[in-house]
Image (cartoon, rainbow, N blue to C red; front, top):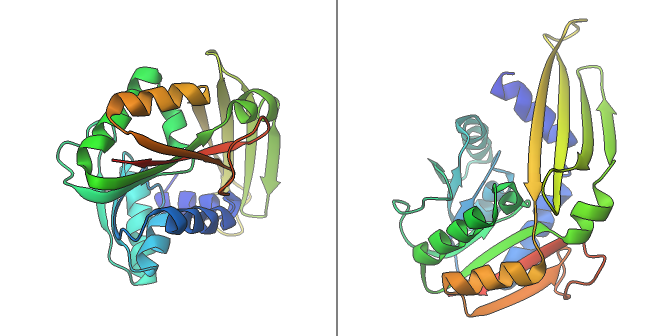
Length: 244
């Protein structure tokens, strides 16, 4: 699928209001810090939102295709962002930053607990003293009670999108099966199909706190669902504010 087409489909099915919520949460907790490294920036929607608010943004993603979309988005928005193709498991060449963000449950895509710990270790090293690390993950409730057997189908004249979720092979994990049908050209009755399998897993709250402490973070606050309230048993998304 051409990246322009993927960008179109992604934009259609993604809830744009979530980016506004991530931005608002960040602004409340960045403590005035303006130099940000955004991990797993994807198509660049949040990076552009940060840049429009006068933040100095470096945005990293593993996918060259995503970064092409993000770069065009920044050009269209007339903002300056440094995009870097890289893996958040190795930030040794990325420099130092006042703040690091990693939203949209991107850490849940790490293969195992060891990889999550590696990301925390890498982030700690790139943060300046007093720096802030903000991230979110799916809660146990979201993974084990909300996602299993979830099904969402969306269709227009140009494309169809199918999303079905099932319990994963590991404890506290989920597998999302995504299928795109996109018209080969405008008005065409021929559609191209692309399938994707997304695997996510999470861990108990105390495991994340232990791993953050292992990385060196001593001051960690936890919140839930884009608010400044603590998590409870039905919180769907956990947020962490960690200070170096």
